[in-house]
Each structure stands twice: as structure tokens, then as C-alpha cells.
Length: 299
Image 1 (cartoon, one colour):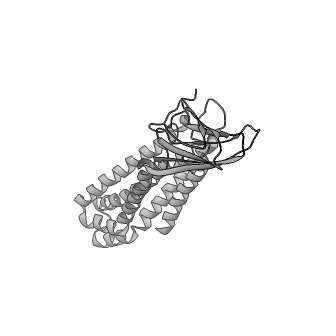
Image 2 (cartoon, helix red, strand yellow):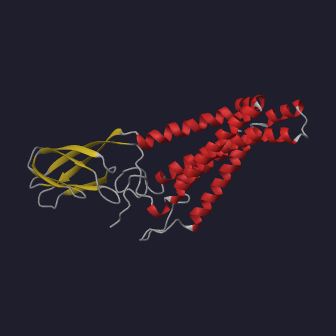
Image 3 (cartoon, rainbow, N blue to C red):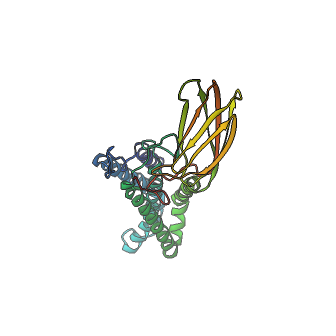
């Protein structure tokens, strides 16, 4: 079982880390995934299926041996009933892996995570890949639940033995996957972005830029040290604010496509240091363009 678990987990990790199935060439308009990316994803999904098969087979071996001793192995009805819980365990492990892979691919390090400075992002033209994996994972988990319910009704002792041997571990793993990924994608968490800019006399000033989650309400403040007059500017999609003084505050709702990109600029006739901080609430994993609720307009 441990070998199967490591194989399945390794397949998910490799798909996530290398952006399997969602990597595109860097051209416009955004094409579909490269053939190599899709082949790599197919290989990893196959490895995931093998890992789930190992979990179901070896995690059920002792249960199968006990059943063969308790009932004639040649009876077709006994043999078919014996395969139902094992198939349910396979579908549970495989479905959980597909679901996690589908959730993780839009957040792969190969494409940029969340809303860091100028993040790369998944191309909308390949969003059918994680969507397909999520749909297949939900379908497999639903089928596994139906098969377990069927097994409990037709052969309750057999189903109970499989549940004790492997089923409960698969269920715990699936719940853990959902408990970790769903809140990270949906529950807003307080976050902040800050930077320090140096203003030099006679020069064009300094700037910094970052992107924020789509629709986030950003509240910020800035302070010059030493306290000399400066021009502090914030520019975004439809937002353009300039304040003159030694300190100030601002707020805006992050908008823009494909990501809400904002630029912070300072200039002064005297040398000074300007520090600013932006506070906002958003899920730890931000949906990239192409995901539900995220814009896909590149014009």
C-alpha cells in the first residue's frame, strides 16, 4: 500500500511541479497545450492509476484470501461481489488523485502561483485540461461511493473487511485533499504587500509594481522618511491617484485583464525613502485567468 501511495503522490507532484497538460508555447493568441505536455500528463495519470491499483490490490489481499476460504472460489456471484469493494477503493484513490491534480495544475510553479509580482498565468485555452481532470475525479469518487453502498447491501461482511483494510484510509486521504485545497481556493485570508522606494533629486523617481487578486479591496498607506514633500502615484486599470506630501492613504478595488497590475511611483526634489503597505483579503491560492470568475479578455 505504501508503494502505491508513494507512486500516486509522486505522479500528482510531478504533474503539479512541471505543469503537465497545461504548458503552452509563448505565442499569441494563446494556443493549446504542447504535445509533449499532454503526453507527460497522460504518463502521470497512468502512473496514478497504477498507484491506485496497487493500493486496491495489495490493501485487499488478506480480505480476498479470507473470503476464498469462507466461500467456494468458483461461484461467479461470490467472485463478482468480491471485486466490488476493491473496485470502489481503486476508484476512490484514483478519483482523489485526479481531483487534486485538476485543482493544482492552475497553480503550478511552472506558470506562477497566486498574485506575486508580474505572475505568469495559465492560458485560458488550456483550462479544459484541469476542468476535465476535476470532472473525472468527481465522477470516479461518486461511482466509488455508489459501489461501496452496493457492496454493503449485497455483502456487508465483505464490505466491512475492505473498509477496515483500505477503504477508510482512502476516505481519509480524499477528505484531507478537499479540506486542504478547497479552503485555500475559496476562503479569504488577510494578506499584505509592501515595498520601499528611494527617491533621488533630479531623477525620474523610483517605481514598483505588483498584481492583486481580481476584485480584492486594497487599502494602503505610505510614509516618507525623512518627511519631505514627494509625489506618490498609484496607477492601475482604471485607477490613477497622485498625492503630494510626506504621507497619505489610498484604496481601490483591483481590476484588470489578464491580471490586475498596479504600479507605485515616487519622485521628489530631495532625497528620501518612501515605504508603503497594501492590505487586502483574498484566498491563498488565487484563481488564474480562465478559471471561474476570472477574466479572459486579453485586449
